[in-house]
Amino acid sequence: MESAKHAGDAAVAVSKAYGVETMFTLSGGHVFPLYDGAVHEDMRILDVRHEQSAVFAAEATARLTRKPGLAVLTAGPGITNGVSGVATAHFNGSPVVVMGGRAPQSRWGSGALQELDHPPLLKPITKLSFTATDAESVGQDVEMAFRTAVAPHRGPVFLDFYMDHLFSPSPAHEVRTQTPSPLEPDPDDLAAIARLLAEAERPVLVYGSDVWMDRAEEAARDFAETWRLPVIPNGQGRGILPSGHELLVTRARSVAFKQADLVIVIGTPLDFRLNFGWFGNQDALARVVHIADAPSQLATHMQPAASAAGDLSVVLWSLGTACGDAGVKPDAYASWVSKLAGTAAAAIAGDAELLASDSDPIHPMRVYGELGKVLADDAVVIGDGGDFVSYAGKYVEPKQPGNWLDPGPYGCLGTGLGYSVAARLARPSSQVVLLLGDGAAGFSLMDVDTLVRHRLPVVMICGNNGIWGLEKHPMQLLYGYDVAAELQPQCRYDQVVTALGGGGELVTKPSEIGPALRRAFDSGIPYMVNIATDPQIAYPRSTTGV
Image 1: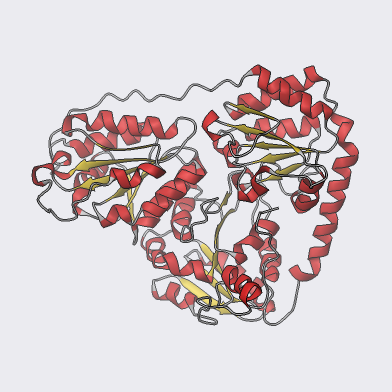
Image 2: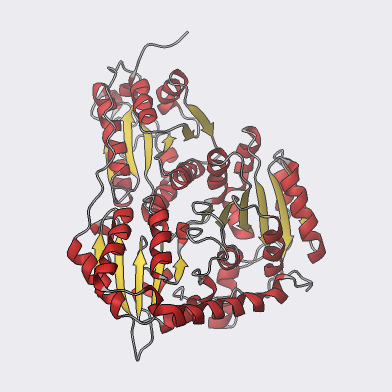
């Protein structure tokens, strides 16, 4: 027998109107009416084993589908367990609504179970963090939450409900979903950028995650191809120019950034991944252009030569027109593009030996040499780790946009299992590959149980070097010793997966990697290939990302 209409029904009905198909959660009594509402509204409920995975799954859903994600967390520790997921969504600009339970208003202040005023905790990492006023306002409040989350610049919103309000009757709410009007860029800003491009001899384009999130991938590809500009992708900008594209110069990144005289960064912050916006060299710094989807995202820690804000499709199409007016000539950069393409080709050729390395212990690059042979064009690749996943960023080049997920600039480990849950739901016919460092595996591996219970096959590849590689090697360099950087050598994470109902195996020889990967993809279940790699190999990184 269905229960009477209550505030939970109203909340879920509004969520569905905004395109939400799945509620990610971990069961808790404070939010039972939201579950009841999901049953009434025929919304899928997917329950996880740790609240962080629920928020990470909602965030990955938003990033893969470009529709808002929904996580429902019970009061107190349920919400505090989800804070890292909310912070990750904040740094990634992901439109996520997190609904929380709250101790009853009728008992507020008397020490009810898990009584905590949540919104002040979430305020610094959300666009909006508030408590629904009463049962009758729930529909209106939830609509405000979603409307805020999807408006540029996108981001998470937190909303909690007093428990007694959720259980109370609530009127049906007429939803008026609003698609934000495209923000038009200032034509003068675009003209200034076009003039810089006309003056440049060695320009570089950087495409970031917001190009994908703003549905601007077609405009971005057209802009690069029309004006023959070399491109370096960042985050979910990967795949906008597919692997093998003549203008994609990822492997010439260092040369491009050091020798460029103009770097146009679109849809990503000028943060540590991009040397904080400083390119070129001490003798000749490159001029920098920063383009974002909203004025709030433009760099303030340095002064770009020019900047613009607006809907990124509109910006890119309009910038193309401005370039024509400014006399930009597509063949002006041919020698520069040729140089970067040659540098990239040489780097790729130079990788061949290590990608096929027979060294024992296994060189981590051999893993990526084998993975590249079995990845489909539409595979979703998820990175959750330090050094091991850094190799993925270098050697896995997506063929299509929207198929790459990593934690983003916040760098939070433990995203992987939640991201995998979301990816399997969002892309049911694609390969889903989770690349785990053995350190990262410790944060969320219990959620393999979630994959098993909900029949969500994912291939997990664990780069298992038995150390915290991102810490051990720098500590050795700094101090000549290291502490708190050891893990169990060849720890059987694969047996954790099999114990939870999946499949897996330990690989210790290079020749075993390829066959193990094929078995994993053929298994049709959550499957871990646990690969023992050489702990002496450190990823050759710089601290600035350049």
